Amino acid sequence: MKMGDRRMKAVSLREPGVVEIIDVPEPEVGPGDVLLDIRYVGLCGSDLKAYQGGAANLTYPRIPGHEIAALVKAVGEAVPESIAVGDRMTVSPYTACGVCPACRVGRTNCCEFNQTLGVQRDGALSRWFSVPYTAVVRSEILTLEELVLVEPMSVGYHAANRARISEIDTVLVIGAGTIGLGVIAAAARKGATVIVADIDDGKLGIARGFGADITINTLEQDALAVIRDLTKGEGVGVAIEAVGLPDTYRLAVDAVCFAGRVAYVGYATKPVTYDSTHFVRKELDIMGSRNALHEFPAVVQMIEKREQPFTDLITRVYPFAEVEKAFADWDATPGKFTKVVVEVG
Image 1 (cartoon, rainbow, N blue to C red):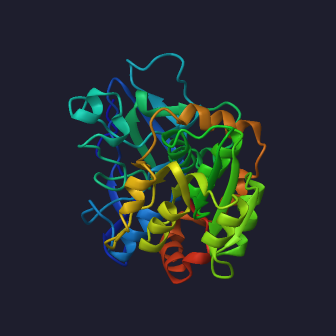
Image 2: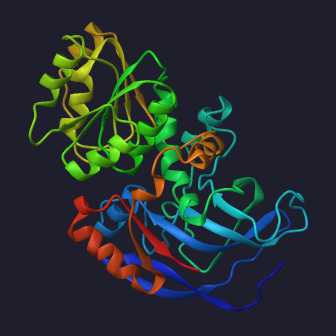
């Protein structure tokens, strides 16, 4: 199914600091594709870094957008009947080659040749967008505002799964941004005791609403001292870093107990130096955590229960015509925003 030579509006990061609304061809829809009427697109930390010029693996110009809430507009002839026009959908924005070492062991989320929407390939910040039907995730319960949160929550949920969190664990989550809140919600759902460290009291307040048992403002408290006091000097069983700074990378290793587990979600853009004797003496499991794997359905079910105030994560919704202002506002005061969403439809 072809859309012809018609044009539609899309947002382009032409270069760092330059956001434009441009005309692009309407997408074509293959036999196995779903055409989406895009309603909301969330912006994440990688989008802000792209705007600032510090995003890894991104070339310009680039259409951003991998946190998606949409309605099905049309389907190709090979799409299963279970997907119908009008369904509310989000999208898994990753690709997998199927043959690299990660794919061969089933860990397609860290495919060596992954291309995430809005990073290595153009994203969905446009009027319509076409994806393979295997990439869509439906909910008959969630609103479109809730659906736009599924992808970032899934990244945090995957980190919790990667760290093998269970009800017997005390978990330190460093960073109460959107990804960190996904970790907190997942860890609380699994029954763990959750400690959260951040520099912003507002975000720590949101963290308590998502299941944090104890919060630490690291501008006002010595996080390591507090953790040692809380754990009778042992340290936490699991530390998950969702910031991406050398200090917080080191805090995760310092705060975790002997035989503990550390998972890194934040990308550190500067070199990190360690006292590596901790790695060996504590016999730590140190892991990276990238994207999401099979967590989308679990996150949809979690949000559908509405046990946490998920839409409170959305700091502000900007209309499509004000997307340049959205990036500029976020760049000027990043600490004031948890989640920026653009209303497209």
